[in-house]
Image (cartoon, rainbow, N blue to C red; front, side):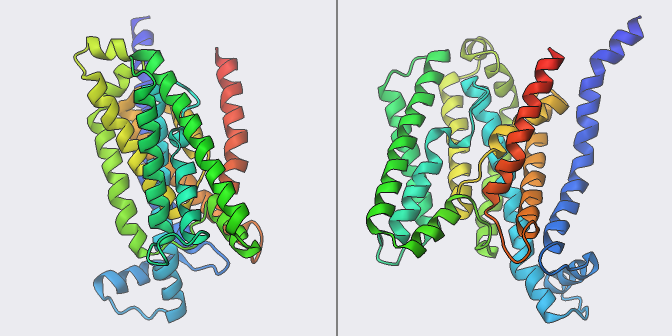
Length: 353
């Protein structure tokens, strides 16, 4: 009897860590699959040879067109997709723990709506007179939206516990509606049909314009968010039971809240500025990982980051091949996959209860 009890209590942790050790090689395979699969199929051997030539000047005889596709287009795209998926999934984990709201996701703070407004202001309204790129405008808009939402939440009452979480959520909804209205106004007033179509494609999420310059921004942002979350695992576990429980354990509630929400907002703003709004990653992945590895953030944080990376790479691959000769916005794929997956998680959770 004792052995049975011990095995039952240890099983979730063992299953979580076993699953976690399996994921890194799966992520590596996913990156290679992202570089291989597309309108032009490129074998893994060509990818290895291309990496050898570019990184170590190995001198393998590789077709220049294949090498250009792999190095200049697909590898950078796969890396940014992995970083974006990891960052969005971690942002969802953080916000769901801090706000104690199962529906919290990275776009709750108005970041996506602000990025949309910034992108439209640059590309349609001509803000910056051509000296500001779409990504820069989107990042500035996302940052402005978060600052306004944070200021509104602070002015509306602060407080602690569920009250503070409710104020943040309501402030985020208000900010999102404001910036969505501004985006619609600029599009209706200034955009022609071609501009409107292009910006709508970007707003649904697109990795088509990603290049190596974006990798050098996406990788540090993703690694920073992972490092900060891992450093505050104990605090995230405590916040799951409420701000009062966290304070009773000696955690500086306000300081940790500001830091973690700020990191989640920064990572989301960076990713959205490069790839647009990609929904469901920050909502579905944390719930799916809780179902697989449990609620302890010691395992949940790295598992969510890795699963988010794999999910977005896979979604990008599907977006490139599902319709021959056409690339769909990646946000369409994540929604088509994420919505049924989230419904399944809800139904299985109900059955398990």
